[in-house]
Image (cartoon, rainbow, N blue to C red; front, side, top):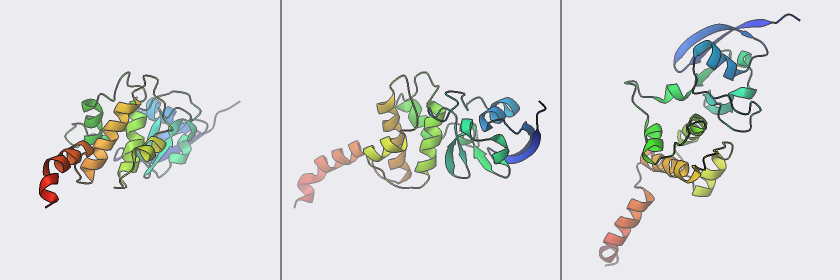
Length: 180
């Protein structure tokens, strides 16, 4: 049986890339094999764990079930594309470090990509909504509370709001004045 190949041109982390791919190859295979982007993890390979998540044209996608040939003309962002231009960590990546939301690290890129995708919308979500938005990602180290705390922290920062704990402290401190 002969393999069929197709030339695919897309933008990955801001750079236009072109390569020949097997028409049966997943986007995960292309990103890891052709471009060495190992932050895109090979987990379940059936779209259940979220470890392979990338952002394609503003939507978070499990790259293991997305054919590489479908990437033609698309803009793809991996975890490597979240870094600031000077190479430092983004606010979201730093929050994961600060809140110890990284344990073994296998699921981290998927959580970061999903969170980045919905945080870009500039909405304020409840904790229940955040849990639902992150539900497609599995963490075997049970770091969910820390992950939620990191995402919530960045959500408030990006929207120019005090952290809920800070707001409670301000209210408690100034409540007597505000009641006058």
